[in-house]
Amino acid sequence: MKTIYKTLEQGCSLEEVQDYCDGNWVCLISPTAEEVKDVSQHFDIDLQDMISALDEDERARVDADDDYTLIIMDVPYKEEEEDKDSYGTVPLAIILGDKTQKYIITICLRELPLLEDFRRGKIKKFYTYKKTRFIIQILYRNATYYLQYLRMLERSIGKIEQELHKSTRNEELFQLLSLDKSLVYLSNSLRANELVLERLMRLESVKKYPEDEELLEDAIVENKQAIEMANVYSSILDVTMEAYSSVISNNLNSVMKVLTSITIIMTIPTMIFSFFGMNVPLPWQNDGNGFVMISLLSLVAVGLAALFMFRKKLF
Image (cartoon, rainbow, N blue to C red; front, top):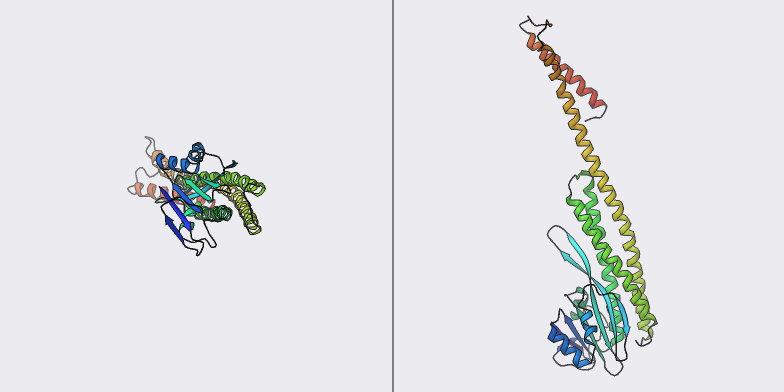
């Protein structure tokens, strides 16, 4: 899908337009081959640079050309399922025109809340004709989304921890594994984005005003904070998974201990009745209440054994 936006210099409203013009924002979301080719030919952009953004495994980087600058960054997203949420990242390409061509092109495989915030006017002081500011605002907003998703991931870990003391199932383990996988994606993408931010800070082809440099520094700080949070949550998740495995093993041992104790107790009356079932002279064999006496003896033996095991905390 291709959509063209432009902010009027007289106001702050973002309007959708039909034609290419200076100061516009061309937003490509899961575009068709015809749309990519059309934009590539109109702005004289290498087709391979545009296609690279549609590769899920494309690495984050900054490439400065004579006519444009290509920035590829990893953007987080959240997928909601019935019983759990998962997190991942997808490449977002930003193509910035040179001084003679005032345009910005964004290319992505899927709808992202990050770009939706700009389209809905949630970002203050956002203008499509301020190219550098627009890029840095995307980078800063992206770092805040990482922080938001990391906090949500930490809450998910906390909910699973509450189930650890009573769980003997594999369901929680699968949830922890899914969160661990999400955390790996986020951590690797944050480190890759850190290199992009540092490269932009040094890149002279992207003109930066003092307020832009300050916002870029804030984006770098937010990204570093997200990296530290990801490292902390990764350690917490590792400890939680080890604790979960230990709890499951301990719960299974407790169940086996109880079953073993019950088996031992039930063996006592079997042994007593087997003893009195031998074909030799035995006590109470001629007594009419012999069966009752043997039964009472078995109950007493079982009670004593159960009391002993209870005091030894075998139940």
